[in-house]
Length: 168
Image (tube, rainbow, N blue to C red; front, side, top):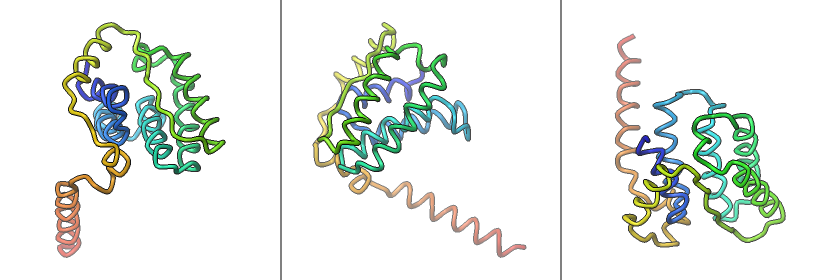
């Protein structure tokens, strides 16, 4: 199984680092089905994003993105990426989360039930190896992470764009 796919469940079920879930699965999605916004991996990315918004009390954003996730997952129920999961339970957990978010209830995490023994073993191993995360960092990760690499890549892209436009 692809390490980024395993890492998604590691972060989701381990320390509930939903921001990192989004990052690793988006990277994997870009390898598997770049640009296919209906792909089931997008639905799982949306699940993590919705949980991140809910933890931060962004109820409208959480409700919107969790609902998109549920619709995506339902559309893709036969996907190979969902076969390792207890899909009826995941859909039930998503519906419950959406209901709680719509009622502005406090954040409540859940674990994705993995029924595939190989994936479960890989995820459980990674969870045990994972360092503990600070709640404050998990809550504000999008603002606290080191963005040097992102900013450098953006600056390089802008430089290339300016350089190309000057040649025409």
